[in-house]
Amino acid sequence: MGETLKGVIDWLFEPTRYFLGSVLLLAAVLYFRRFFSKELVIIAVFALAGAFLAWAVGDHNFHKIITKGDNIPIVILLASVVFFSWLALRQAVINDERKKKGEAGIELELGKQKVFTWPDLVYTEFICILLFTALLIVWSIVVEAPLEEPAALARTPNPSKAPWYFLGLQEMLVYFDPWIAGVVLPGFIIVGLCAIPYLDTNPKGNGYYTFDERPFAWTFFWVGFVLFWVLFVILGTFLRGPNWSFFGPFEFWDVHKLEPLVNVDLSTYFWDGLLDKNIPTNPLVREAPGILAILGWFLVIPPLLGKTLLKGLVQRMGIVRFNVFMHLLLWFALLPTKMLLRWTVNLKYIIGIPEWFFNV
Amino acid sequence: MQKLLQAVRDTQLWRSVFRHGYPDTPRNRTLAVLSNTFLHLHPVKVRRSGIRLSYTWCMGGLTFFLFLVETITGLLLMFYYRPTAQYAYEDIIGIREHVALGVMREMHRWAAHMMVITVWLHMYRVFLTGSYKPPREFNWNVGVILLVLTLLLSFTGYLLPWDQLAVWAITVGSNMARATPFLGHEGPGASLLSFGGLNFVHAGDDARFGLLAGRFVGEGALLRFYVLHCVGLPLAAATLMAIHFWRVRKDGGISGPL
Ligand code: HEM
Ligand code: HEM
Image (tube, rainbow over the protein chains, first blue to last red):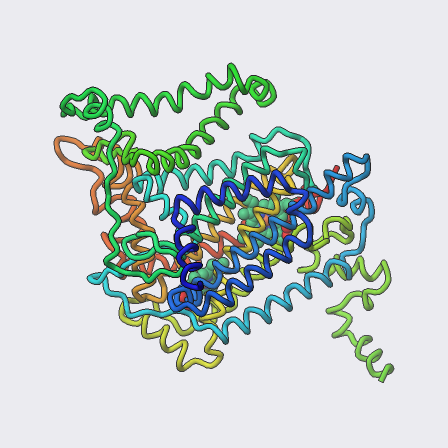
C-alpha cells in the first residue's frame, strides 16, 4: 500500500504532469475562490501536508532530500507562499463581497482611524523581531550549515546545481540555451518588474486586496511568481537529480538514470519531414522557417491582437504601452510555448544556428 | 525606590539621552517617535489598516531586520575569515570548531536564505495590494533593484566557504555569463565582433571573465566576490534602503484605499 502510493506520487510529479497539474490547481483556486478562501481549507491543507510529511520522512530517499540543510528554506518557502496566497485571496474575497453589498472594504473601514506608532506599531514589530530572533537561534543550533569537501575544480559533482534561488532559471535550461534562459529572460524579468507600475493603468485596487477589480493583474502575477518562479525552484531543488534528470520525491538519485534525448529541430521537421528534401547547408536558408516563425511571433501578433481582440486595451493603454506590454508578454510566453512544443513534438530548437550560438 | 528612579531621571546624563517621559501620553508618544533616530523612520501616527499583520505580512520590516542580522553576523565572520584559496576553507572549519559562539556561520546562512524568501514575499504582498500604483511607482523600482542586490549578496556569499558546493554552484551560475549576447564568447553575435579573423570577444576578456577575474572560479573570483559581498553590495543595499524607506513616507505612508 505504502509503496504503491509512493509510486503514484513519483508518477504524479513527473515535470509535465507536475506543471499542468499546478496550472489546473491554480485555475481552480481562482475560479472557486470563495470556497478556497475559507479558513477550513487552509487548516485542512496544512494538516494534510503535515500528515504527509510525517509519513514520508520515513522513506530513506525522501528523508535524505528534505532534511538537507539548504533545502529546509525551500520547504518554508512553499509553506509560506501557500499560506500567504490564501491569506491574500481571503481578504480579496471578503472585500469583493462587501463591495457587492455596497459596504466599505476592510482597509477603507479601518483606514479612517489613525493610531499612534508608539505603542500600536512598535509593539507588533517588537514581537515580530523577538519571535524571528528566537527562531533563527534555535534553527542555527539545531541545523548545521552545510560544508562539503574543499573546492576541487577537477572534480565536477553530479548534479551541479546553482544556488537554490536560481534553480528556476536552471530549470529553464531544459528548454532554452543559456543565452535565453540565463541572460535574456532574467533580464526581461527585471525590466518587466520595473515596467509593471507604468503598464498597469487600472486605477482600482490601489492599497487594498481585491480580485474582482483586477482579475488579470492578479492572475498574471500568480502565473509569473507562483507558477514559473516558486514552483520551478521547487522542481529544480527536489525533483532534479544527477544529469538534471527527473527523480520522483521517493526515487533514489541514480547517477546512471538516462533519459533518451530524441529532440528534433524545427528545420529538420520542415525540410526533411514536410518537404522530404535534403536539409540546406546555408544556415539562413535552413533556418528560414524558424526565423519566420519568430519574426511572426514578435512582429505580427501584437498588431494583429491590437486590431482585433485587444482593441479596447490599446485604447486604454495607448499604443506605446501596449507594444511594450505585448513584447514583454511574448518573451514570457515563449517559455510555456516551448515547453508545450517539447512535450508534444519533441522540438529542440525553433531556430538552431549553433555556428553562431544562436539557438532559440 | 520611586525616588531613586526619579533622581536618576533627573540627572543631566539621563536627560541628555531621553528627552521625554515614558510614552503613555499623546505628547510623549509623539516625542518618542520623533526624537528617536530609528523610530523616526515611522510617522507619529499610522493608518489603522496599514499596521495589521494581515495587510503587510510584516515582510518589508522582516527583510530589513534580516539585513541587520546579516550585517552583525557577517562582521563577526569577517574577523575569522580570510578570502584566499589557501585559508578560506580552513577558516570556515575553524569558525565552527574553535570560535566562541560557533553558530554565527549558521545564523548568517539561514538568515541569508530567509532574507531571499522574505524579499520575494514582500514583493508579492506589494503587488497583490496594488501598492506599486501611483504615487508609488518609483519606490517599486527602488524595490526591484533591492531585490537584485539581495540575490547578488546571497550569490557572492555562497562562494565564500570555498567548498565543492560553493565553487560549483558559482560555476554553474556564472556559466550563463559566457552566453551573454555579444559580450560572452559563447553568446550569439560575439563572433561578429571580429576583425581580420581576430575575435574581440574570447574566453579571456568576455563578460564571464569580468565577473570571475579569470577563466574559471579561482582565487581572483574569491577575492572579487568577497569584496563585493562584504563592502560593495551591502553599502549599495543600505543606501537604497534609506531611499526606499524615505520614499515610503514621502509617498504618503503605507498604502491604503484613497
Ligand atoms: C544582506 C545580506 C547578506 C546576504 C544575503 C549574505 C549571504 C551570505 C551567504 C549565503 C554566505 C555563505 C555562508 C556560509 O556558507 O556559511 C555568506 C558568507 C559570508 N558573509 Fe554574507 N551576506 C550578507 C551580508 C553580509 C555582510 C553585510 C557581511 C559583512 C559585513 C557579510 C560577510 C560574510 C562573510 C565574511 C562570509 C564568509 C563566511 C562563511 O561563509 O561562513 N555578509 N554571506
Ligand atoms: C532588501 C529589500 C527590501 C526592504 C528591506 C524593504 C523594506 C520595506 C519596508 C519596511 C516597507 C514598509 C511596508 C512593508 O513592510 O510592507 C516597504 C514598502 C514598500 N516596498 Fe519594500 N523592501 C525591500 C524590497 C522591495 C521590493 C523587492 C519591492 C518591489 C519590487 C519593494 C517595493 C515596495 C513598495 C512599493 C513599498 C510601499 C508599499 C506600501 O506603501 O504599501 N520593496 N519596503
